Image 1 (cartoon, rainbow, N blue to C red):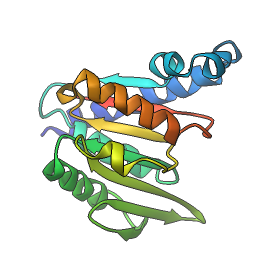
Image 2 (tube, helix red, strand yellow):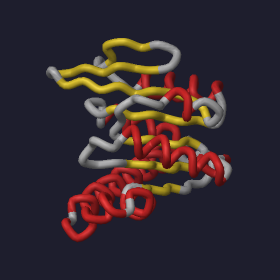
Image 3 (cartoon, rainbow, N blue to C red):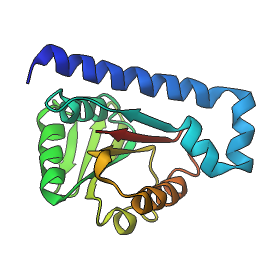
Length: 173
C-alpha cells in the first residue's frame, strides 16, 4: 500500500467527519433530530467514504480512532477475522494511549481523557452494542451490508448515541 494514498484516504475521512460535525451544529437542522430522528441520522450523521481496494481505508480507520481516542467508537467489520485485524491496526497505531486491550475492545487513556473502541462483526453488532453509549459507529467494508442490516444498524446506533451532541455513522468501503 502506498503511504501517500493512505494519507489522502485518512484526510478525506477526517474532513468528511468535520463537515458532518459542523452540519450537526446548525440550528435549522437541530429540530429535525427531535421530530424525525431517522431522517436526521441519515441526512446529517451519515458519512460514506468509498475508496479503491488497497487505498488504506483500514489504516484510515485506525488512525482516525486513535486521533479521537477520547470518544467511544464501535468498529463493525464483515466477520470476526476482519474485526481482529482492525484491533491489530488500532493497537499498533496507538502509541502509548492504550490502557487495556482485549479481543473485543480497546480502552484508551491519556491526560485524564479516556475512551473505548468496541470491535464487532456484521452478525453480532445488534447484540454487542445494545445498551452501550457511543459517539459513533464505523462500518468497515460497508458494501457487504444488506438493507435489513443497515436498518438495524441505524436503530441500534441511534439508541447508542441518543444522549450525545454529535452522532456519526461512518460507512467505509
